[in-house]
Length: 270
Image (tube, rainbow, N blue to C red; front, side, top):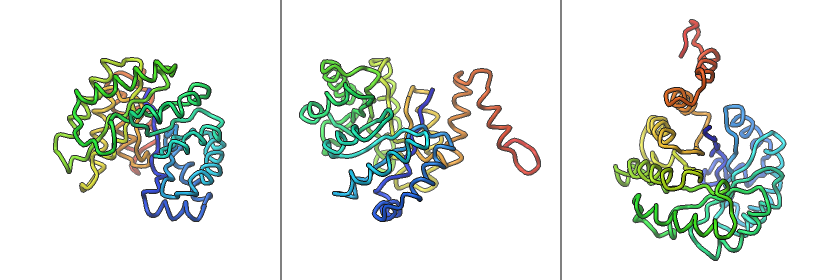
């Protein structure tokens, strides 16, 4: 079954950063509740822009989200921060993003093995790596998976993240991601995949149109964890209808339940 990660609490968003700087935990709680009620299993937290206050923020917010019944995905470019987060959480946690950097992996690998942690393996060699195509991504993923397995990390704790680049920069970027995802699922059938699908539509109008259709294609190609805003109605409908079409909604239970709970004022299904 597809796992849904909410991406609404990101300090790259100026409005969210303002709330984080003010340590407005009531706002954070309301946002988390809303996302969880709309189907998110994980709440993604990115507080990198808080700089020195990043960890103190996580210490307050992670227990709030876990007490609400959610799990957290922590994104940080600071490997020390990711290590500290593991000591804060009580439930399963996803951490990322970690490029194929042996020094960074070695720094945190023992902590991952000893706790209930999944690691996002970012499939690029460094931040300046702009030349990403399916075959190259497969080679990087193979090195990454082999290295983690040699270090004792379980396959089920590895989440491969194929890079999604905006269509605005190259109209073939969506196709490239889908081809990469297909290769990953063939070569690493027991390793999960994760991606922030909203990245494809960066800079374009009516982004929800691209995200909702891209979501359906990605699910059909085997994506396991989707990162997006679950409050967008088209997102929920895309997930439900896609799972129905590809035979992963037994007896159409989820689809029919959604239709019953979402009717217009005349009683017709929407």
